[in-house]
Image (cartoon, rainbow, N blue to C red; front, side, top):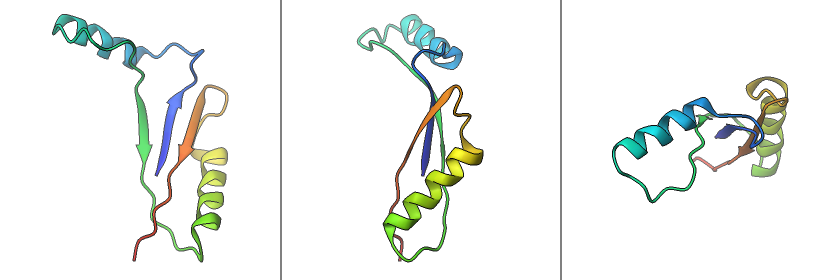
Length: 79
C-alpha cells in the first residue's frame, strides 16, 4: 500500500471540510485533520525489501506529486 498525504505546509481543503463537519457534530476532541489517499498494489517480488524499493520507485515516478505530497509505503507478504 502507498499512503499519500499533502505536505504539512500545504493547506488541506478536504481535511478542513472534515474538521468543520466534526465541529458541527460536536466531535471536539480532535486537534487536527488531514485527509489523504491509499493505493493498494499487488506485485510479484523475491523479497519484501525489493518490493518496497519497487513500490517506492512507482510512488516517486507516478503515484505521488512530490512537490506537494509525501508518501509512505507499507509492504505485506501475501502467500
